[in-house]
Length: 109
Image (cartoon, rainbow, N blue to C red; front, side):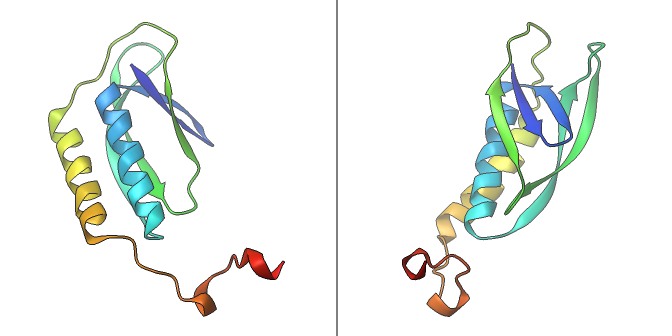
């Protein structure tokens, strides 16, 4: 089991779901975009609930191995959907940034 770490809490979910969220979030960040994803997670009392989570550009999330034993959430449809979205972005490539559009020109500092 892994957990998705956000600024408003940690959410325990299955390894494949957490990895797919991380991959899609990274792909979105590379093209400076965001999305809201709906993923299952395990609550403190052991029930499975759902979370709408914003991921992508300028969104702070982390994926970590969970230290506690518990239910590993498995939802192949969600993993497939997130992976498909990430692959579509990865195949299209990362758009280049024009020098005038860059907010981080480190050589000018």
